[in-house]
Image 1 (cartoon, rainbow, N blue to C red):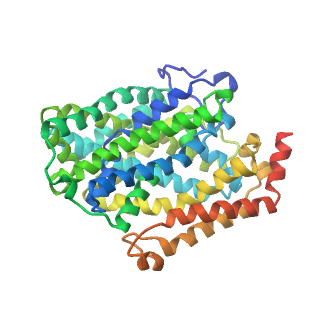
Image 2: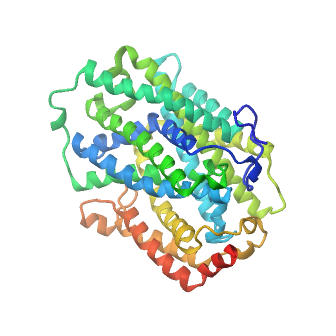
Image 3: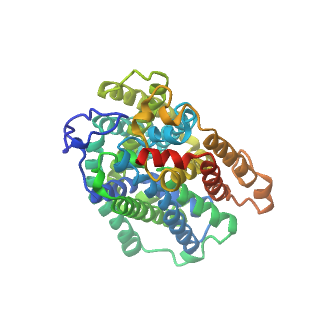
Length: 463
């Protein structure tokens, strides 16, 4: 049985969690998502609203709250799938796309995890260098990488425990930051006049907040799959929703404030300057938070990597040793990416977020519609691991068509440095591609899936 205190290395990988090893409560999900969201990367994401999108503070606050509140709905709906199926989220995608059809999406998710780990490492390295100058950015990246690897290697229970610790440590650091900046440092008299509201900037900030939440969708149920089957959809949903939304929103609001008062919009050094004597303690706490989030990305990235490999090697049953070795390799690659891309971090990160949302929005629409409206959660889990895909086959043409169509339909609405679509240009560079992707793909898949008889599969399984 998995040690619930987190003192032993987790033995399970992508396979169903036995009912005898299910454990945990809904509040464990709240602390995991609340604690892991209070870190420098979420603060920097919030700063995009005032540094990159040039919004005034009130507009930034509204955009951040709207983006997180809306995006969190999709994140939490995925979380509620974990207790029922007991397998990682991307394994479950075989039930929607087929065993081979899911490969492309799972591979994209591996790249996504790698990008987030590298982004976290860059900020972790900068944070450590800010408080201890002899530690260079590069050595700081390596230190955070080692911290992340340790938690990822131990696995599920230690990562949950890490989240509980970070809820208190990073939560107090966040409260102290707001209190010091507002009460002790004092806010500039013209703070509320800095920046301005533009439609493009507002929607860009909303999208950044929504993406932060939706980016968790491919792995959020990985952290609820050990929960007892009778945990319930509503408790799992609300604990995950409020934990993630409150943690990320509070951090992003601090970032929006720092973006207006920090010199040259440098959030990391700006935080250290604004906090004065308590800056070292706060940044150390937030650096620990980076380690928690990076560990989660490494852990789930490795599970997705195993999912890809198991598709082509169905007889291979990956265990703890395979997960440990792949975790070390994953961290090594992400560390190399962080060391290489640190100089152009802000620009690279914003483009990464925008392109990521383009490929993830259609997937989340298909997954949620199939789970809740077509199959009603009644999947044949054994078929997920069958060499021929079992009842779901190697390909689901309906899902693959809707996914490809979902990406194409977004292109005219996309606005990033690499490409701006004609409709986005007509609207002054406003990017609403992810909204279009969700709004079009969800209903389209529901109609086509029902016409193809997908709902009959759920009826058969339920009986």
